[in-house]
Structure formats: C-alpha cells, structure tokens
Length: 178
Image 1 (tube, helix red, strand yellow):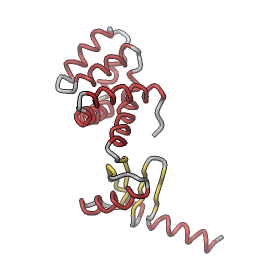
Image 2 (cartoon, one colour):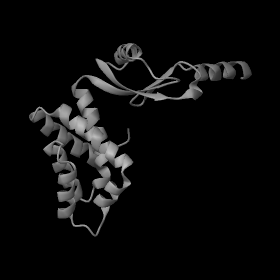
Image 3 (spheres, one colour):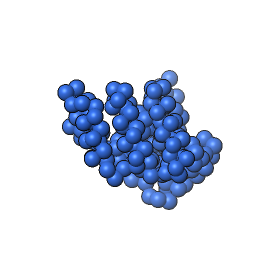
Image 4 (tube, one colour):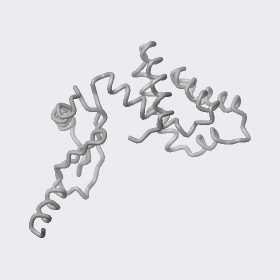
C-alpha cells in the first residue's frame, strides 16, 4: 500500500471529520463506491482533469453526480479539484480505509485461493491470521488464483503468509535440486 504523504494527510483530516460526525462507516462505504467509479469510468476521471472546464463547474458536476454521498466526501473532492490533486482521490480512499480499519481493531487482508471462500473459511482465516498481526478481525478480500493448485496465500499489509501447494512444491524443488 504505497501512498503519498499528501493522500495520508487528506485521509487523516477526512477520518477525523467523519469520526466527529459519527459517519465513519458511511464515509467508508461511499469512498469504496467512489473508487469503483474512478476505476471503471474513464470519462469521469477525464472530466475531473479537463483543463477547459473550470474548477467551479467541476465541483458543481461532482455535487450533482455524488448527490447521495456524504457531504464530507463531496468537500474532499472539491478540495482535491481546487488543489489540482484529483489523481490522489484513490490514494486518499485507501488511506482512509486503513485508518477506519485501525480504529475498529481490524486490518485489510487479501486471501488468494483456488476457489471462492465460504463464510466459515473467511471467519477461520480472520481469527487465525488476525492473532498473528494483533488485530481483532480481518476485512478479507478473496481473489481467485487457479495457479496456486491448492491452499491459500494471505497478504496483510506488507506481510505475506504463503501456505499454497505451489510454494511448498517450489520449496521441495529447491531442497532436492539444490
């Protein structure tokens, strides 16, 4: 999770505001939706970056498009537009999600497996690996990777726990071949 210092500062300010207003969950949810829009709708991003459109008009369009979102998010996007840092929006969202998870005693984790995990498996992985990183729970994102053959690889921040069959075979190969 490589983010700029600027994004972390914006995220910290947004988190503190959301915490004061008791809207951390709502802001977090709206930010997830915003990131989806940014990643899937290239025209939206081009609109926000267009030099021929005034900052005032961009802010009006954002207010219209995000009318159901929390006011704090609309204000954050407006500030990013004013400061010509709209490229930092996804980094701000990621940093905010990290702060929100930390406040809840949780961490984000990516679990790579050969198939979709069941709710029971998610709970077991959350409990087992949460203890390893001193967190009460993990917010798990499951990614399917058929090349693993079997087992799971868990990535929590910069830590990777690899108990896949592929990695075990590679280890055995190193031992046997030298």
